[in-house]
Image 1 (cartoon, rainbow, N blue to C red):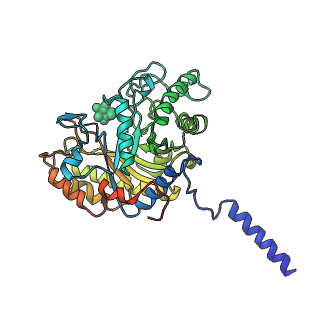
Image 2 (cartoon, rainbow, N blue to C red):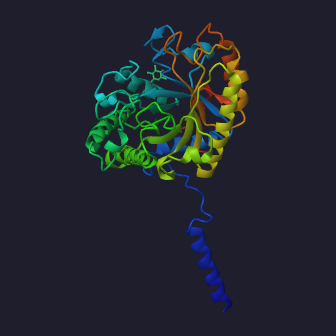
Image 3 (spheres, rainbow, N blue to C red):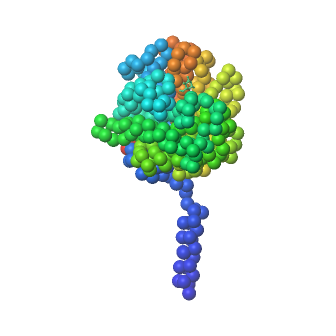
Length: 374
Ligand code: BMA
């Protein structure tokens, strides 16, 4: 009798565990078939985030203030002596078969930059300021409801598939000389809680957005067979966990959680908003077992000489963000990282030297694409 009772108790316990009561949120990549390097990146980035934050810069190798396309040059390196750990790129206009992405970087160069970064043990993340597949107007054109027409069941769905075919062809071409697919953190449909892109919340419903996201992930991984992608869900402003998760397509479709936020002249207002949102993001990331990151930030022209250590750092240091990425250095009036002589350059060197922050010199020895104990 006692044996029967014990067996029954064991069966009940198994049922509870398998029903998910005690089950931990999945610790796997959204693409279960991701290649070993991509899985290692996922695991290692999550581990590193417990202690460190990697520094990232958009288009770092392609151009800077006063220069364009000079082999090996980087404004970040010119100031600190080393490259960023994370490199942001954009593939807007790949969908148009254009030779250059939307900010003028030739796709052939972009491919080479991504290869160089990977070889040095750095991390590549790609956003997609895509035109819309219906009339090819810019990402910022919100004059019609596009999403409802291009998701599965929509009249223009095939046009969206044709766009994704171009994305898949480019991503599929990101390989090492030995033919290994290079891991990429893909960050589509960013800032969706804003109102300025055709995929934003003012021009798509919650369900339409989720359908667009899920279709995109499934098409790239299952139909096109790409297994080198981690997927980053990154919003603009939000004021609660519920709001942040409103358009969340689900744990099986996302690897990195982030948001984009910019600093304007009221530094304290920026700090307050950043602090509040990072706190919410961190809670959501823990609850969903995902990698948290500050996917875009910065202060245009960095017109404050201690912005890095006195404005950004005091807030950043409170949280476990895997990386923080500042936007591109296009011209004197539009840049987010310093260059030699720029007024925040000395302060940026102090930020670089902070033990919590990792640039490429400290990342390379960690071999983040290898499955190992960090
Ligand atoms: C914006 C600006 C634009 C650019 C776009 C996409 O923030 O930098 O000049 O075209 O990002 O990179």
